[in-house]
Length: 209
Image 1 (spheres, rainbow, N blue to C red):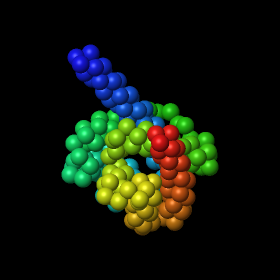
Image 2 (tube, helix red, strand yellow; image 1 turned 180 degrees about the vertical axis):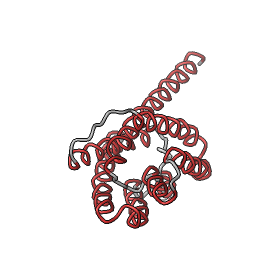
Image 3 (cartoon, rainbow, N blue to C red; image 1 turned 90 degrees about the vertical axis):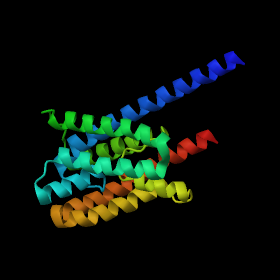
Image 4 (tube, helix red, strand yellow; image 1 turned 30 degrees about the vertical axis):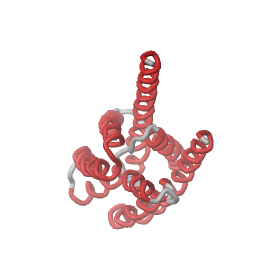
């Protein structure tokens, strides 16, 4: 019995370590994509960074402060609606994202090629980043928190679809600050990104079954 308990505990530790590793990797991808492709190209897609970009343009407050404030508000939402297990992993996720976003944003090396390639690379990086965090039972402490809360109450409503609708709502505000071009690109981005994410999540579900 004791050996079995030790074995179970060891398995839990390994599982949690793998989950945290996925969260870190996911946020490296997210931080890089937003800092090196989304922000420089002025692509708004409805996430926390996009919200911060819109508010920054209106108020002049630096994006670092805005992302931190919005993240804290979403962490509270996460605690209330998604539970403590998700909340503690989401804290790790939020720290990692803000750290890696700031690191890559301040890194004076450009990874821009052209809008089409940047768009595709950002779509893949962000979709995989979201997938890593969600599959590790953590949110990215972005707008996916709201989508995850809705999915928890209504499992038939997919997380990817929820993120897409929330993104469109944010994009509506972005129209007045970033203009038509950024909004149109943002809408296309939301479709491509949510499609890739939905594919990855459905694939994971099939593997589990």
